[in-house]
Length: 97
Length: 168
Image 1 (tube, rainbow over the protein chains, first blue to last red):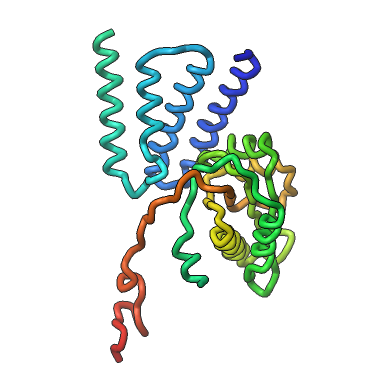
Image 2 (image 1 turned 90 degrees about the vertical axis):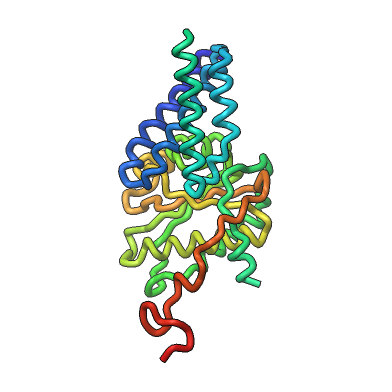
């Protein structure tokens, strides 16, 4: 991946985060976690594009990609459990390293 | 039946990489054109975005926009015209578009999670033309589930709030 492509990917994520922050002021509360989960997946994707490969990043990306974010906000309870499980995964990794 | 189309419309957020035939796009635009508006003021403007690079740029400033749609219809209020009912008018235009899209086998999703100033800048919109809604359009990767609706008895009141059908 060229440096220009990496910068483009970063700017893409940056726009998503900044616009997301601004628009969330007037959006339903549940949109906040949805946006942050999508940003998390974009971050792992960007890392992969930049040849930063790690099993934890891959697993986080896989889990978020498999979760039906489209089904929200109806499946809010399931979403909360999903995020809790993801946090346990991350905390376990941090504990062991 | 129109009611069948209304009931089968779903919000689609994953799209195939298949372009929308121009004749179908034209029908969608006519559906927007013929929406009702207060005093027939037609206080709207519609911007079609199909170029993949342009779709990507709009998406960068629209966090609620899922997938990569084949086309975006940016539904704008035009405040250079009488605009008292503009928000309702553009909403009805967007619904017209989505219903015709459903009838034509297209998926759609109406999105409000965008930054209006960013889109005004990207699309070079005049200050009076405000992007209110984005209608994402394309062929769905898979059918969306039916999210259901609240029971009609819970929504509808007869003659007065809380009234039941047949009551005097």
